[in-house]
Length: 128
Image 1 (spheres, helix red, strand yellow):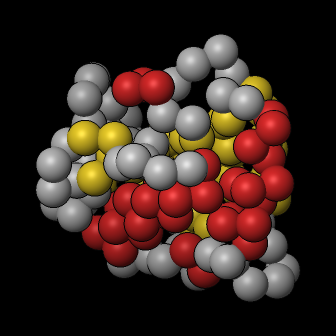
Image 2 (cartoon, rainbow, N blue to C red):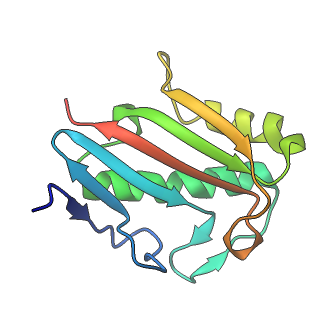
């Protein structure tokens, strides 16, 4: 028997594989990684890594909203960049989405992301 309770957000890109957009386990919500896909077209947005980071957060916010949460409930983020030279631009966009105290975060470089996205972000949020 599983404790997983899936969340589906109509305003976020649909899952393109055998995974849920997010899953509840008790009071913790585990959000799958989001890339900068425009949910209305299903296509990667154009623009630099800052623009892509903002689209990723729009997608994450839609998933969180479908679960009754917001970015204010996020406690941990994992950020994946295809080029660490994009760190400062991603970090600048990221900083506009949270207030102190900030969530814990890990940022790593990866060899590639779906659709050649430059950034992907996943998060864990918690219901108060």
